[in-house]
Image (tube, rainbow, N blue to C red; front, side, top):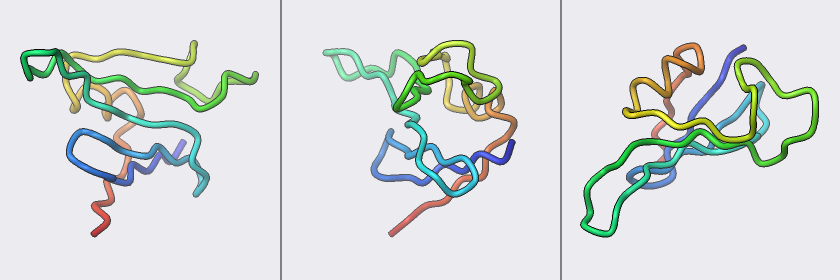
Length: 79
């Protein structure tokens, strides 16, 4: 499936599927400011979930791992 990620700000992306926003990809930052990982989240958990989702939220150690899991989504840097 052709996912597109539109950068909103550092560490925050809208996740689009076929031109429709369906979720987000966000950086998880601890209180000390260190990056703990990344989350890919759906806005709705309505079934059927789009592939490769098996639940509403998936966590990854790196941004690259999250993008790879999405099938190599296209990155768009707005503004």
